Amino acid sequence: MTRPPIDFGTDWTNAGTHRRYGHDLTLWVAAQPTLAFTDAYSRARGLMVGAGYSWTDRGHGESRLLPCWWNTGVTFDADALRAEVDRVVAEAAAEREEKARREQERHERDVASTEISAPPIRAELARLLAERPWALGRSLTEARDLAALEAWTSWGLRAAERYLSNAKANVRRAAERLGRPAPALWFARAADPAVRVAALEACQHLSSLDTDWAADRNSIGWSQATCWTGHVLSEREALDQGEGAHALALLQGHRLQLADELNVRLFGEAPKRRRRAKPGAPAGALLV
Image (tube, rainbow, N blue to C red; front, side, top):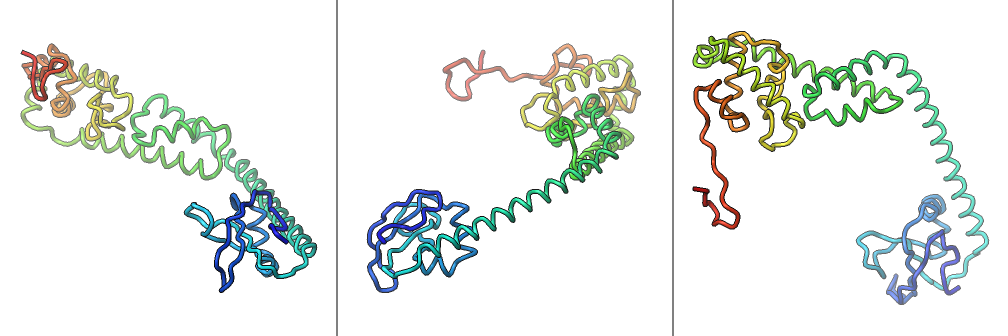
């Protein structure tokens, strides 16, 4: 026999002569491992090895082992080998099919059971996505993908409950922050109703810019440190003195995103803005 007796659904290449167990033998290497070869080698290893089949790192340039066949010159019953290979490969395929069938049945039972308790959680998640997506933070994309699924499993239900719980905690932390005493400087300035009106306007402006809910550091909208509190303030119809003071404390770090006129109303002056260098100017050069 001069080439592999069974091809296992892949191409084989003559890799030349190689030394094995003290003998120079012709080595054939498969183009890739197939499920049929793996099944046969794991379930009928004795016959496979006796016929010359194995795995090798020789005769090819890949970093993994590939199926191989050594032309040992030893006589073996090719028909018996093929019959056993056909049997074990069919056996393995049947076991995988049965496992897939049981898994599908388990999945269907899981979906049916989950759909009994899912509707209120689905509704709450949909409401949160529509009204307060910022509260989900970095889980926003995953929550949206989950809400779009037609059917949930128990895993999906647990994930939705986790997203909702985390979002509530984020809102609660923002409320707790607003409940703490504000810095005296900002509290005194927030005594002016006009300043509080400007603060609410500025918060709502930043929230309108904050389309990524601070997921990216792009200097647009709120930062990760101010996101939740800033959005909570933006939802107010009006700010009291304490809320206004907290708003000012948050807004001072975002002054460059606010119009000069709004900065004057908030802080009494516009911030100094860096002017952009002319195109082609040396690094560090500024417009005059």
